[in-house]
Image (cartoon, rainbow, N blue to C red; front, side):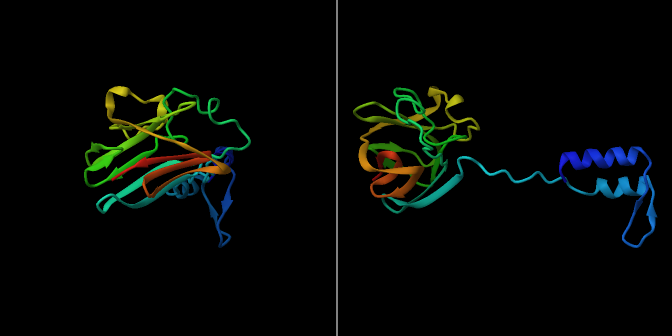
Length: 193
């Protein structure tokens, strides 16, 4: 029930207006209030501007990996160096922090990452390799705004490529060579082996 409807009903009840049931019998204010107390208020489902996505797959030596992220769209905006600044930590998605989870130790860009659940951040660069960060605080409601470097478990570098065809919505997939981030003309492969 919407709050505005609940407010209206409360005013009507306060004014001692009698409600009639299906059978035509009148109900007192107390009976109607008791019926309403048993009802749950359901908030309307809001559609996210950047839908929440989950992807799963197998990497390396048959290690199951899952990734959850908010998938923003370009929407005609300038991304790199503007919406996503260079040389600053980016949540690699939208809204809450992107996170990855896997049950076995893995090798990421040549370094060992113990099994677990980690937030995934990147530091975009105007040219050259990007920094990829796995942070132990994975459940961050506001992404990079709550990021703390002291919780970094692993930092590695990954080489982005730039393609001709633009991809409107961000995607993070589990595919060769590991985790692949694609958005606009960026393809960022994070090698897991």
